[in-house]
Picture (tube, rainbow, N blue to C red):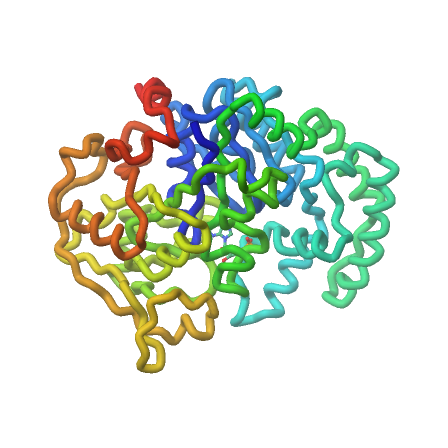
Amino acid sequence: MANVIVLGTQWGDEGKGKIVDFLTPSFDVIVRYQGGHNAGHTVYFKGKKLVLHLIPSGILHANKLCVLGNGIALNPKAFLEEISCLRSLGLKIDNNIVLSRQAHLIMPYHELLERWTEEKRGEKKIGTTCRGIGPAYEDKAARIGIRVGDLLDLKVLREKIEENVAWKNEWLKLASYSELKAEEIFREYAGYAEQIAPYIQDVSTLLAKLIKEKKRILFEGAQGTLLDIDHGTYPYVTSSNSSAGGACTGTGVGPTKINAVLGVAKAYITRVGGGPMPTEIGGNIGRLFQERGDEFGATTGRPRRCGWFDAVAVAYACRVNGIDRIALTKPDVLDVFDEIKVCVSYRYRGELIKDFPPEPWILEKVEPEYRILKGWKTNLHGLRDYSQLPPAFLDYVHFLEEAIEAQVVIISTGMEREETIILEGKIDDLIDQKAIKSEII
Ligand code: IMP
């Protein structure tokens, strides 16, 4: 069985949490490789809605090891809160969570600096989650970051906090914020250190050992490809590599040890925060998408901008990630439409474009060109069997497959695990269907 990356092919919120949760029985280890508590994976556990920000949803299954790689930006308070929430659900988690000693810590000044930068950007603001993610990665690239492993030596931790706070106070003064006190931050983080220490390990070494033991690993992407710092719609992106390459750099596992990349795509598209989105629909139809799809941010509660499926964007995501197989989510949101649009190309200054241009200054001027398909006008919600899928919907699926040059291998028809259809014979090399079915009641 294979080691697989599962990631989003749009601007996040594709339903990765549900797909990862569904596939988890087929794997031994679930690894997050980038991002921080800006992500929000909504899952249902014993009938309760649960939003996980940092810890992979694999933790809800018995005996799965959940690993946070070095590519993560970790807010220790958020991490510990999530652990206590999971404990309150009666889950035994102590030996099942591992945190890379090379992951970077989010510090109190990161959030302050981010709020200030966003304010300064005015109309051009990114619309970040204001969780301090960007500034934590800035410090990583500037080589002044404080890492999870630094929590293990309080002398080192104190020194690094003192240096950083002295520096950051200069900025905070410019922003007219009050000065921070290094000693207070040190005491707070020394408190976290004691609680976090048992989870800290060398993740690259651990994963290499598990791979040798033939354990199966699922790498779980956060955000989506179009929010990737390199391949997304820069600067309207997050500050890490959410695309497939991030799984290697964010864990210390080499690319030859990963066998496949499964993309997750929603049957339409959404975006939270600023930046262009060619197929965005406003007005009543946009609101209908929002309501039917419950498109409100899992982390910030902000309404998501909604639009028709953009095959130009998803084909691009398939290319940069090497995706040839897709899990299609939430097609039931489209059940009510007579006609369904799919964007197949853009027109820019009179010219036809088929390759997605990531520059926002081009994207905001492109005109999407649509193919109009017949709606299926029947209920897809909760369907569990391929034979129940209406022909007009299958035509839509085949059309998408051609447009994005990838095969649809999983169709999700609802939030529950059982509301998922695996297409016969198309993913047997990656997953153990018997293990998956054994967890579906
Ligand atoms: P940041 O990651 O907080 O720096 O935000 C940068 C951009 O990524 C903003 O447009 C956010 O709305 C977006 N973003 C960050 N995390 C997520 C997510 O989990 N889903 C969707 N959008 C996200």
